[in-house]
Length: 228
Image 1 (cartoon, helix red, strand yellow):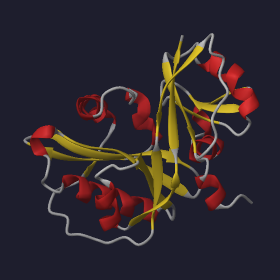
Image 2 (cartoon, rainbow, N blue to C red):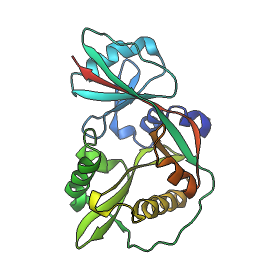
Image 3 (cartoon, one colour):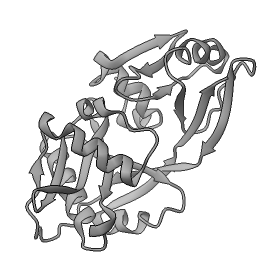
C-alpha cells in the first residue's frame, strides 16, 4: 500500500490514479487531466515527457506539469516552457476553528457560470468551467450575487485539495476567505480525508492558512508549457 506521504509528493498523479481516474488521459506513461476539466499533468519518468507533451499539446494550447522536484524533458521544436511557478504544499496539522458569521452554501451546477466568472475576474487564465466537476464548491452570496467561493480540486483516496479560494474585489478584507477555507476543511474531515492546499512561495495568504491550522510541508512546482 502506498502511504499518503508518498502520494502527497505527486498529488496530481495519485488523484488521477484514484478519485479522479475518470478524468485520466495517459500519453507515454505521463498522466494528464482531460483538458476540459483541468490542464494539469504529472510524471515520474522524465525520459517520457517529451513525447507525452507533444501529444497532449495537440489538444490544448497551454498546460502545466506539477512536480515536487523533477524537471521534464521537452521537445523545443514543438513545446515552449513559458515559466516555472515556485510553489509549496501545505497540509492540515490541527484545525483552529473560528466563528462562522456568514451563510455558506453548497454550490450546484446552476452556479457553474457564476463560479467561472468570479474565478476569472480574480485569477484569470487557467480555470476550466468544468473544473466544477472535480469536487465540492462552497459560496457566500450578497444581494443574490456570488461574492466569495472555495472549492476542491485534486482528490485521492486519502486527501482532498482546497482550491479556487477567491473573493470579489468589492468584498475583500471581511474574513470571507477564512470562513470558507475553514468550512471546506471541515467538509473534507467529514470524509476522513486530509485537507491540503497549494500556493505560491511567499504568498501573503500563507499566514492565513497557518492561522487556520495548516503547515508547510514541501515544495510543489508548476511548469507552464505552451504549444509552439
